[in-house]
Each structure stands twice: as structure tokens, then as C-alpha cells.
Length: 257
Image (cartoon, rainbow, N blue to C red; front, side, top):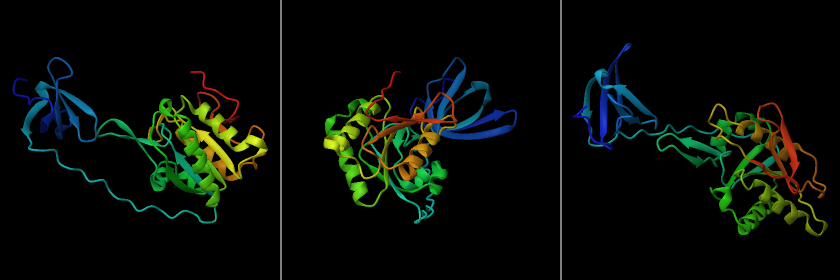
């Protein structure tokens, strides 16, 4: 289509379909194939139509702004034990921003509880954001920050901590946390879990939900750490399918893939 706007132009498109006319607003893109016009919708998805489907289009001065609905968070059950969720990065405590396609940190308690409402019946969640980093970029100074965050959590009355982490170097951080607490015969005053996932909690095929539920359950109600191979644990799927999670000693596990 010779008069289709150049890529990056805001446009309102009306197309004729078998169900009638439909209107779409978005950004013009180069056609994804011969005889197709393509645009990025306001929800972040791309859509293409045959040129013959186009009824009309209008070039806009700017994209309309869609304001997100503000939903008041439900109060948490004060009778439940307190668990600190310490976010360092990784997919497990993130969500997809469909406007950009990027994954962003989900570190507000109400957002996490909305994504995994089962957590409301297990513990009170207090979220702490240490960063939103690729796990390959984590260094020993970040291990010290994680240790400090767990120390502060226990001082504030938490019975356990869940550290969400990218999976590539999760086993290294787990070992550092374990040795940091159990050196010279010590042990943490509560349970420390490190967990990760392959897909974010807002995806239907995510492993994040089950990993988070299992991790918070252990952090809130698991056995008291003895200081022997349990100063930190790693909790992830036991297999490629849902149904069970493995609890691994933080000082004796590694990622193979």
C-alpha cells in the first residue's frame, strides 16, 4: 500500500473482516509480508492485515494515553507469619510490559499477591527490592547485600526470607548465603529460600507460581535451620512438569542447563 504511513507513525486503522468492521489504534510498522500492512497495537502486540481488508486509516498526532486502573490492595492477614520477599532480578518476580515487550520487576506486594493469590493464605508478604539485574552481573558485593537484607528481615520479625533470583547463577548466590550464615558454626534465625523461574508469573505456562508457593510455604512454615546444609535452600520444579518442587541444600546444588 503506497500511502501507508512510514514506520513509527501513530495511526487509527479501520479494517473489514468477516465479523464486520473493526478499528485498531497503534504504530505503523513495515509490512510483515507481501501485500500486508502491519501495526503495533496499544497492548504491545503486532497485527497484520491484507491490504484488501483496509477500509480506511487516519494518521494521528500522537498515541492516546491508556491509564492503568488503580486497584486497592486487599489487607493481608496479620495472624500469618511474616516473610520477606527479596527481589534481586530474574523472571520469577517480574511481569511482561506488553507496551514494550520488556520484563519488569514485580516487587509491590499487592501486584505479587494478585498474580499468585495463594500466597495470601500462607504468609504476610513484605517485598524488598535490591535490584533488577541479570544474574550473570551479580558479584560478591551483591551477596553481601543479600545477607544484609536477610539480617534486617529477621530483625524486623520475619520468620523467613525468599530471595528471587535469575537462574543462571542462583546456585552461586545460594552457596554464598549459606556459608555467610553458617560460618564458625552459626545458623540463620529463620529460613532462607532462593528460587527462580523460566517464565514470569503472568504467563499461563509459567513455573513461577508453583515455585513461589513452595518457597513461601517453606520460608513461613518449614523446619528451623540447623546450620548444617540448610542455612539456605533452593526450591525449584523437581521436573519439567508441575506437581512437585525439589528442596536442595544451598551449598550443594548447581545449574546444568
